[in-house]
Amino acid sequence: MSSVGGTGGSGGSDSASRAESARAEAARAEASRQAEASRKAAEDAAKAEAAKQAAVRNQFNVDSFTPAAAAKAPVNLNPSPVSVQVAQAQTVDAARSAEAAQSAKAEQAKETQQADASKEADFAKEAKEADEADATEAANEAAAADVAQAAKDAEATEATQDAEAAQDAQATEAAEDAQATDEAQAAEQAQTPTVTQENIDAALAELPDVELNRNPAGTQPTAEVTAQNQQVQTALRELGMVAAAHVTGFYGSITEGAIKSFQHEQGLTVTGTYDAATRTAMANELAERRAAEAQGITAPAATLPDTYTAVTDQQLQDIMPDSTQALRDQYLDSLNTAMEEFNISTPERQAAFLSQVAAETGDLHYMSEITPNPAHGDYYGRGMLQLTHETNYRQAGTALGADLTTNPNQVATDADLAARTAGWYFDNRGLNRQADLGHIGAVTLGVNGGYNGIDRRLEAYDEALRVLGQ
Image 1: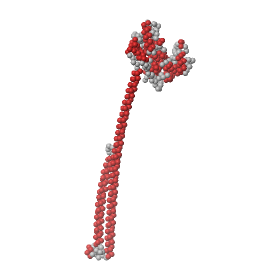
Image 2: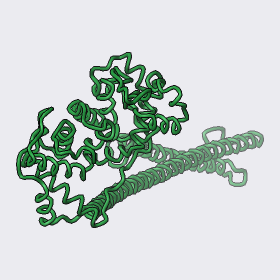
Image 3: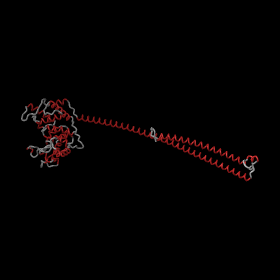
């Protein structure tokens, strides 16, 4: 069957077949004409022969036989009665034979005519069937074309619907994103205190408008400088960066470390010197915290991940470049177990914790103080955050289910306890919360009690934020 719109195929063969059928029909018509002519000729010949035989019979009829007829006879003019009878019988036989021949010819002509009629009927039937087949084929092709067009229309409709659905989905997603952004901004605005210039000016009035530096060890600053140092230390105390015992009026290593940590948190150049930029930043921070407290605004809690992401060996090496492979193999699993146990699970918390571990242990080399303080007795610094004081050993042991007061040295020799005591202390002292706020100074103060090794802590903290945030 030819395809819709196609060329060649059965169309050419159908035309040739019809031409051949036409030629065959013409040949059959010619044969029928010739047969009819032969039939008529035979019939005429039979009639002539019958007339001739009749004439002969009449000539020799006894009743009509006369001398005149006898004169025309080709033979004996006076045959005997027997001869006449024989002749008459022969004539009758001849007539009968002629009649039989004529009937046979007529029957043959009839059969020929019937055969031609049958052939013509067969041809007409074949032609009708061919026409019906052509009509069926055309109908099938038209139906196939309709189906193809319907399928094409359906595909076009589906494509249009898909495009519209995609556009609707994009519009919905965009609307949801916009709504989420608006809600986040509204929430942020709701969590941001309103700070007036008056608030800032009041804080500035509390801070000395001079540059201050670390006092050399063994010296005593003037009364004026001491008062100025105390103003700065009081502000640092309010910001949670020094303890009350550190407000002495002497600008030593603790005050310098607190200033460095504050400058780091504020994105200032870390110098440890109290200067104009540091004064302005401190006044702004004090004014904001006071306004938040007055307005009942607290920073939102950190969102913790559902699944803990372990620190890798490569990340630990980047944070603690002086650690050896053997040390990392010994302590990495214990570190991850402890951090997961005590919710040190965000990059900010892990960075703050690991930077302190790096500074306290010399990149995992020392799990106890090199030179213990005799005032601490058996409970000197051990573990990854150098757990110190009998009270802390007792509290940690109770929390961890281990007897650390009887055998405190296991905090240094057992990798799991070295890590778990550090994790417990970090969480118990609220340092996870300080890490969430980015207060690395408060974290350092909480771990060290001061700012020993602050430069190393800040360096490790920045590196940890970098590698853990990737």
